[in-house]
Amino acid sequence: MTALRSRLATLAKAALAAIIVGYLVVVVDPSEIWATARAANPWLLVGAIGLVIPNLWGNGRAWAALMTPLIPAMSARTMWRALMAGFAMGFFTPARVGEYAGRAFSVVYPNKWSVTATVLLQRLIDLVIGLWAGTVVLAASWYMGALPAQVGWGVSWGVVLSAGVAFAGVVTLLLLIPKQVLRVAERLPERWVAWGAHLSFLDRLSRSCIGASFGWSIFRYGVFIVQMAVLVQAFDPSVAFVGAFAGAALAYYIRYLLPMPTLMDLGVREGAAVFFLPLFGADPAAALNASLVVFALNIAAPSLVGALFVPGLSFRHASVSVAETVPPSSTDQSSSSA
Image (tube, rainbow, N blue to C red; front, side, top):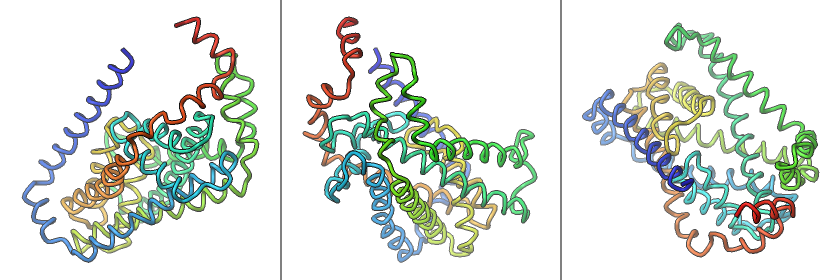
């Protein structure tokens, strides 16, 4: 029943993504989208494609830094394999939860839950960087009058800014006190006590490792924002790079700020791009094309390549992990319930 609900949720998210993208195509005008795509600057497209590898490298290095307490010297080969398998397994799962399993079962480490916790920690770091960067760009754009008076439905930009700052502040605080978070996990009720063991690596996670992960995540953020801006210019040479950069940052800001109801965020990011980028002089068709190409380059293509690493990889170390990740009390409970 759980598997069925998961499949239905995935299908619903995929359907919603298709509906949103279809709506955007109709609103923007299919003929404009096609004409803009045909007139795209090929050199800028090649440049955007070239930024895929630095983007993926920053992603992998940011995660490898957090994995230091578990695997002190992770090889580049292992990092790439885990990264690609994670993309493939996360492509068709709600909220990309399959990415956690893809990475966890790509490394030889007994406690798979600890590995998944490092992926979650990396996502939180990405979230913090995207929120703070987007907040700065939004505040500057609002101050300079680049944005409309209100977001819509009577909501002011001040409300959006306040929500972003509050959200980013809470997550930042949690990232700054990992050992205190571990102490809280250790005091959870008995049914949750396993998480204290799964998160024990936080005691060995040094500030230098967290700093390195932040540094690589900031690098990666800069790469994919520049990539988006380059693509906007490829489809609309009249827009200034600064405007394309600001619009791209705000489009990603909305993606980080709002819960994503669609599969792989498809449709939400595109809608935000179509809303924000024209405010900075970009053609709506160029904004939509750029966002769709970003999805193809950074998510779809790595997932396709990662599919090569999935066969024979899933649960390869499951026999080891089950014995060492589940506390005795939890094992007994699961046996009795079965």
